[in-house]
Length: 280
Length: 280
Image: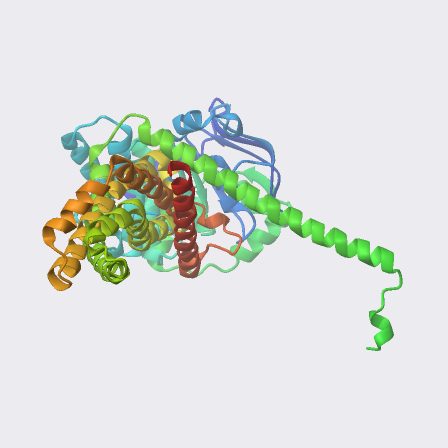
């Protein structure tokens, strides 16, 4: 996909249609670990087909919030609704059904280190479908090709670079064509060009598969170029969820301080500048 | 600090305070162990339920039998042979005092079948396979691989645990049988070839004294030990992140693996007594 195509797609996403269904909704979510309250009355809406980016400094509760959306943690109070279903009220089998719509790219990728790349990507297909080996092979190879990964089928995760692992992780997250894809710090530990590569693949796959994306990231301001909505979590509180443009012009003091701290002088290479300008 | 400062101003309230602190500590400890016991119980129930519930996938079970059973055979043969040899050596000099060297085969076989075979074979499997299972699951927990399975709507109990439980229950009686045969043959080498007990007497006395109840006791013990080894090793790894002493990093995995091996070994000896007491 060319940069122009990417650009028009991103512009399309910026249009905030009021008719969009709600994919995920967090209502007054509280969560404490011991005496420390990590999430405080969190409210957030993720509309279907959009990209919501959750930003915030380290240790503010971003990953904990993500784990609530994944159903890995239950809130002390409040609700986490996915397509209207409260995750905390679901039985294990029902939660499993909800998760069939999920794809997740973990911060540390979480590839199975004793399996080769092909088996890693094929795992959900083998465990959750009755597909034949031929169909599985075709599907896995299509997804790996979509990620520009050739000749890695027989390799093990330890034999790949950080960027390649992320792409394999993305291929595995997308292999079941999920409706919602979660990205936990997708570019952590990657250099600038590898980060851009991940963002480019994100655009490409979202356009093709039309999934709802929730991205937890601290790659500010670059991540704003991908976002329809940006939410800042600070000290366990969501400080507004708005478009990137509104976010950068917000008069909320916490958002102002965050924008000032993270978006002061931006030092970009010529390629990065091109990427940022062409994708907005 | 003067001596007078150490004397409480109100001894009664000081004593009450100390008592309350001690009670609080005892209560917290009790709650912790009760919680652990409950967690382990639920874990066992979920694993057994998934082991008997379809679909059954043969390949993962065979792979685990290969790991737990087949790859333990050498160490079982080795320890079994030497256990039988030392039993014959010690037994010969004891029986000679009563002029009953002819009962050597019977003494070796009964000791192995009822007691030493299942116990020593189980302790060997704890050291070889139990520790590896705990470390494997623990590392998967630490590197978010278990979270990844859950998020892919793949039940870790079905995918990871059930094949291990089935393999443990299938492998342990076979390994015990191998241990017993190796021990009897080791006893034959020492008793017959080195100490001069007639070969026919060695086997004839064994055949005369061993009854089905002896074999049954060994079989019951080996089945229970197989279950105990996998249960404790897998559960310790699975709940690594909830360890009070901290289950993080390589040190956490190492500490938890050690504690799993110790706990499983102690459990084997305790259950050995209990089963003997019930079946005798």
